[in-house]
Length: 65
Image (cartoon, rainbow, N blue to C red; front, side):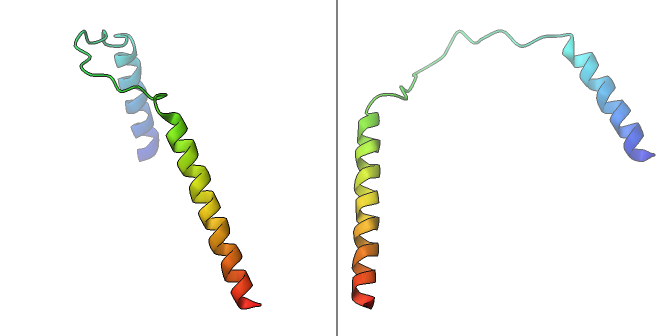
């Protein structure tokens, strides 16, 4: 019963605040950080890290045999 009352209260609050719409965008954005710059560095680091893991795994299996 309590959860039913809680659900109705939350539904009423949401419907009351939904009529206002989203706030206007801010004019002061500040410095923006580009996402796509130097993406190739992350790719190269990922390939090098993958090669290191494969080398380490291959070396450990060769020691065991």
